[in-house]
Length: 64
Image (cartoon, rainbow, N blue to C red; front, side, top):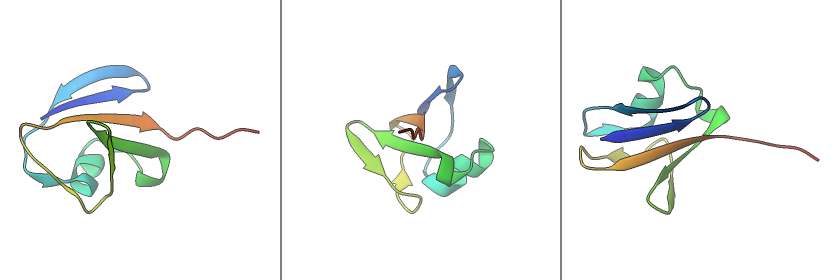
């Protein structure tokens, strides 16, 4: 699967299938700090990702 990371911007290839939580662990990302998007759909840690997916990982931002 293609994984686009947005901070810093880079793209990596990962093998699937695997759960989102496994992907984040392998990329050393904390689930609380990012949003994982497949197409236009927000996915959860329990969702299964396929080898042909294109995933975007965005940092969670807050402000006031």
